[in-house]
Length: 251
Image (cartoon, rainbow, N blue to C red; front, side):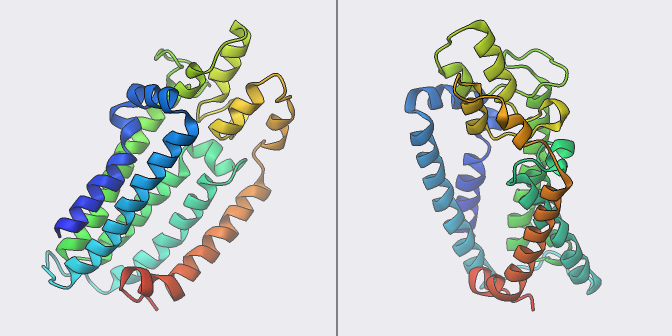
């Protein structure tokens, strides 16, 4: 159990930096540079994930029963995991209407995935694992939506997402350029624009042009692609990957 808890602290801790220390995160990106920050972030996340998976398997070898879920919860879990994978896919695809409407569908999908598994798994290791992910998803979504409602300087701004501190770390060429970077570096965009921060910063440069906005305007086609990817990923994970990776066979 200690390995599972350590992995959760590391993995979810890394993913909670924007919740508890957003300004520090911006300072570190400015100091290290985006690529080094991403490298450290990815390395710590990967180490935490490995610990979570291994620790969960070890904890299940000495099971402690907290509650016994009824049989129907297994079917409920399967039904809920499907839209969870779709939301996660939508969060990673540019230009989906789901992201324009929900803001952070990947976080919502993670929370739905965790809730679905809490329904049908009553061991202590399950409650610790999925409960931690559910609590993190709720806190992260609430924090992200608060950032969406704030401007880059912390004030309320209508229809404009939170400015990424990375934009502030870049040199200004004009007040107009700063305003454009601040507008594009957030997570909520006018008319539902859905632009990753890196792409937004490229678009904010003089060479970026105006083509990015039109290219990433939300469309039902991208939502359909998210549904297909989510369904295929959910099926593949249930049929082939869940057992080898998690140690629990689904089908």
